[in-house]
Image (cartoon, rainbow, N blue to C red):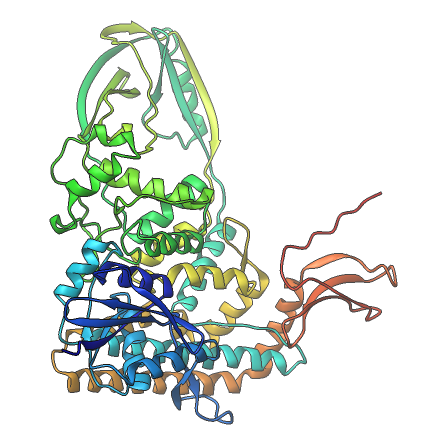
Length: 624
């Protein structure tokens, strides 16, 4: 009897290989078609042809090059995807069924949906849902395959792409067109989330600029060799004498002890992983996401693009902990049968957790992120840490002074996960005591701190701006466009100018309310149960966006000259100066990019130019 043939489509080649090995009864056969690798996996009743995409095989492009603003879009094959498209077209010709096995989220669903309609010429397919690439979970996902793809996710994903294109491309072009009017070519961009992100950074810069430090004083008294601090800041200098006169006087001292339990931190969602990896290892959110994605594809951790802090029983706690015990002695601290969890949920995936599979060769950064995930997971099963808090309080003439000490009684989960608790010991003091010494310290209030890439990603998540997977990329783009610089994100003149031009001409693009509104509307597509209703909502949302963009571009065109002049000035101020010109000795060499994105050093005074490497950091060394 002839076996049924089924085409299984994964998102990445590595995922396709793992699916094939998990589902095949004997080792799958590695084959090639049109130069692209796929796997033939035999089960009892079926032959599975497991092939893959390479992320998005199709992207949105404008139908004609003349219109501006651009509203007429179509899906077109990406240039680097040509061979994968040809391979899938050949494979689908001879199959009885198709299973989509891309990542189970909005982007993964859209990747699968586009392959279905543009390559397979089908309206629907079966759907595998999984959160790890372990053999056990992939077998379960195949056994419990869903009869339909998730159309709500697919249409929401498609709508998001339309919105991002319509806003990002049109307004970015308006900015570049205004600058080009004065003969300057530079890549500028803005978008639905990039705009509010830049606005947050500009607001922070203004707070720092407007900040005026204020002087205040803190008073300390010494009692039995222990220094106690006055519980308020002193803002009036003329009150300092009141404190100086306390020296030699008696105070009434009490000591209070309290034992507290500190619960383990919840398992990682993507944002908290990015924040912690930045704190411990200095990894940017984009670097952490790339590493986590690689660990997922290697089968070492669950799907990283999640906002969940929940670990369902179905992942198999005991089995994972037993596997981890072979490489991590830390599992000896496990005391709980069920993990500590956080409040955040995600309908598609659980919190990030290690699968327990043996890790192969990892580089330093990969090892750091992997071990951080393992430690956080194990810590969720450990007992609470117990600390003793001691407060020594002294009262004199209606003024209260305090000293606080913390001692760890039982480390519990702190044996596993790195959380700093500064231990300090003070003796018990009771009754009336003489004040041995008074110390006054003058201080100044500090300006607000700038965002780092990690704290900005965290802030965007709190404000529900962007998605789990795009926030890190938005931060990278702000650096790439020259809108910000340095580790603590400082807005450049160009960043200020772009924000100012947008504030005057299309403040909506900087307003996070607009982005949040569209996010809710995307959710409303997924909430619809009927496909026709989903399509109606999609068209309504896109048409509304077109009306808003039309008004914005109209306003931009009216003020194009004014915007262009401001951008030219800021762009010039933003230029990277390399060194004095070796040709004329008077001008300075600045880094310039050509239309083909090649870099060269140009002297504007004598027009001498020198080629530069396309990539890498350039620094001028003044050697004598």
